[in-house]
Length: 124
Image 1 (tube, rainbow, N blue to C red):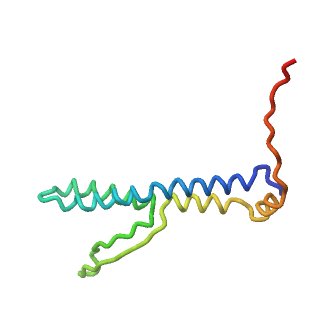
Image 2: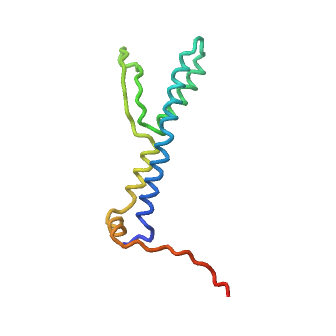
Image 3: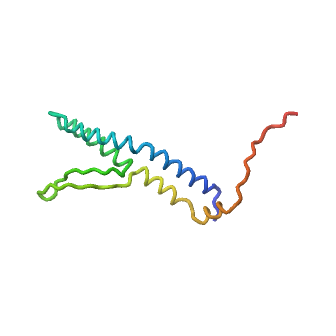
């Protein structure tokens, strides 16, 4: 079955989305680091630390790729861990790319580009 939409435009949009997301990752990583450092403020109540942890979690969930060393409780032992994850934004973009049928994309790329000539009304 032939698709009625342009797969090349969808892939171009995915590329643009990825570019926009890439621009916001560093500032959000800095925000996450700031929140983590703020948790060390002396005499900070737990409920404020919990809010800071929630902000960090939200940032990491969305952008992923945050590398952080922390501590977790594991069978009576505390150990450091470092993780790299793929964020929900990147997963969404990859999901978008997967929706484009490969054969339709190849066919669209092999077609000569059509000139888009603006239509202007006749002014008789």
